[in-house]
Amino acid sequence: MVAHTEMTEAMAGMDMSSASDGMTMATTFFTATNTPLYSNSWTPSSAGAYAGTCIFLIILAITLRALFTLKALLELKAMESALKRRYIVVADQQFVAEKNDDSGSMTGILTTNGLQENVRIVSAPVKHTQPWRFSTDLPRAALMTVAAAVGYLLMLAVMTYNVGYFLSVLAGGFIGELALGRFQQGAMSM
Image 1 (tube, rainbow, N blue to C red):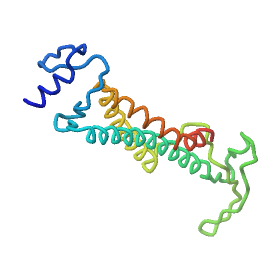
Image 2 (cartoon, rainbow, N blue to C red):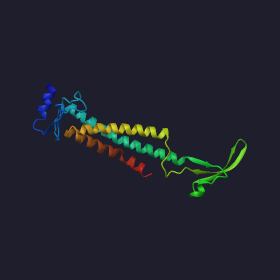
Image 3 (cartoon, rainbow, N blue to C red):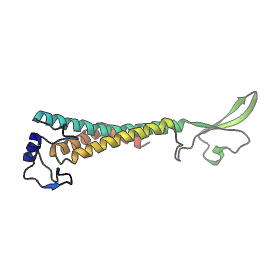
Image 4 (cartoon, rainbow, N blue to C red):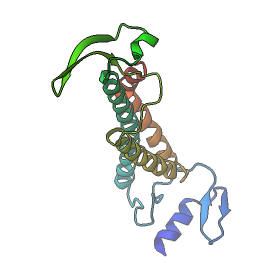
């Protein structure tokens, strides 16, 4: 009851809207240092605890940026792996290279069970959507799920309308981009 009274006093004079369960929610930015984050048990009780919460939000925003950079690097690795795949075209069949540019192909002799066949080895086409692969698509989906969760946690922090929380999320985004942005740019240009 004391914490709720202190919270009400800290938010006195602000524009408030009433929620259906009797709780109040701020509709304008405010600067109180005792704003709960994610639950009532995470309510900073001192300026140091508030600063620690803001530092946590900065790190969480950097983590979100790192997750997107990691996803871009994994996409680049998957594309490089797809480019390195080769297909063997058996003799007496139309060569894929005959339809396209012949620069990525080479000829050779394939021996199987004592039979020798002239074959042409060509690079896999990469201009189309790559086939579903467990080793590529499962980590991609897991990474995006974690990134969505972190993004929603950051959104909830901003929705408290606390200026310190809002600026912490922005600072984390700035620092994350400053430190990691160049890695994603390199991955996107490939």
